[in-house]
Image (cartoon, rainbow, N blue to C red; front, side, top):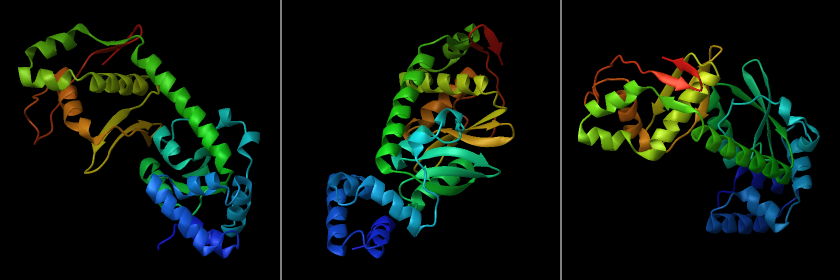
Length: 266
């Protein structure tokens, strides 16, 4: 059985037996939870003991995230969905590297995801899993509330948007009027405007989709929408920018007129 790096590290440190580790791994697989969640939830290793063991095993600093003023931590460097998925918190940025708190420094997938999203290296510091989970969950709720407020707030397209929609075919109208896509694009445009982004990158890949803003010369991942919306999102952008919605093989130029609060932007 191929145990995750965390399990192997605990076995080598004498904190967990081979059989116990394998049983926890099987339970995690069956319940579709992470190994670390099943491990700490079962009480086999406490969150505090796990943090101390990982700090020693990986020679990484141990921090108490409850004692850190997270209001001073950099914002918008990493998609909250990534933080939620891996139970991590970005604490600071030094040059082209992020200082990230984690309970599992052996998680190479998390490190690669961060590098791909931010184009920056990762330096791990160790924190207790239960504290990280609590803070990440609280931040996730806060982010959701903020998004709801933005979507329902003062942001609308100019009258020229309605004219562009009227010129579209019936098929394209059905594509660009999908409510979740409408709300998502509105949010991205408003966020880009408020964050003073110089350009926006909507990047669909085979299995995932990411949106990045260039802010102060750096590309930052802002969101990871479902890959299923890529065609509808592209269609909506084309229509409101008065581009040919049927042309998908060559680049096109277009422009739209938006209104964020009382300030128009183009």
